[in-house]
Image (cartoon, rainbow, N blue to C red; front, top):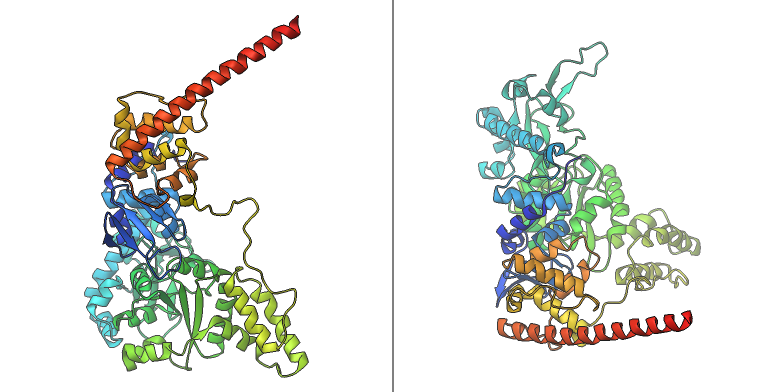
Length: 572
């Protein structure tokens, strides 16, 4: 398998990346003093406690405790793996990611040629759209402007069997791998003949959360079946974990603190055409818990929009069951049911954004829909009916994450049946026994070692005061190895930022504590350090540690002498 990404390359990526640019592209930041602030994207809050330091190239939320570098942010915010985050930042810088391992190393991302191919296919489809008047007329008839078509990369797949084969000669295997070509599955047909999966269709590129084309959806322009056709499962595309339009909707969803989940591509595009940009669609699969988990990382509220017919109600119930386990304090979900024969596309086409928003105001909270659905066909005025409702509802409510939301859901059920559910009422989430409760660190003193490490992390330049002296603190003191290691690194590379220093410690057991020190105030009143006070405090801490290490070393020698004396006495 491919080798590791060299540490020097990770350092280079972080040194050339501005964390403010990375975060501001996803969360709107405002300048405040020496920091940039925003409402935290990782938990629901009304006043901003999310701080981004351009100097340290580090972020920290004083509400939920999330912190890290540009790499960590992408991992938490975009749900990326470490390597994906490095590749994303490197791609923004125009850098190719190397790998360690000499001749055995393979390209960092074996899927990269596939992504590039699909991007080229998308451009090909967009060009074909410009050359096909019938397809343009269809989109205009659906009320779409050229600007909207361009924003979503809408194109046209020409009729025939071999347009892609001719456009991308020599790439047949990759086109098969990405699902753009297929081979005949009819009995007796030659398996060697690969032909276009999509023919004479309006094409909607499906992008992942990084904006890369990973698949396509195609819609016919005239009568026929299937009306919609999606790419199959491929190494790049997994239907159950992707949402159409999420890349385009993210910013608007955050601004609105909600996202609307609809059923089709045209619904997403039509709503965007009328200024409603916080909309996504499932990709031919039922809404599942993974979809809800992804969306709840971006917004605190999800609105599922379904047709009001039997099929729509069935899909809504599946979405409800899948979403309940993702609910917790600060999150909520609603359901909007449209009249039979109507969908978001038809509503905005006839009534505009105002008409759709009027419908949206009629959305039903998820807990209300839960009990309404379960109560259908049950006489909840009778004792037996109430017991039946409780029996159906309790297992579902139990799947909600412990907290106030879950408790209130149980209270609603109790109000409906007129009795307290003794023994089943949830308690507040307990603090895990193996995890210490959060400490009020600003109200507690720091050890001299922690003070020294804190200052080095937050003001790396103070190390210059040591004039090249290595290992200034005796290794007999707990934490000396970490402090001396940080100092040695900074003496060799004085320009390292807080972010780079911490990324180098990621694999070490003390990484979490170092991350906390990187943002923790030194003073109990929360005052911020400046350069002069940082240097003064660092010098004082080192002096105290030296004195302590001298005493500790002496004590160890005395203890060794005593052990030696005892040994000699026993020998006598």
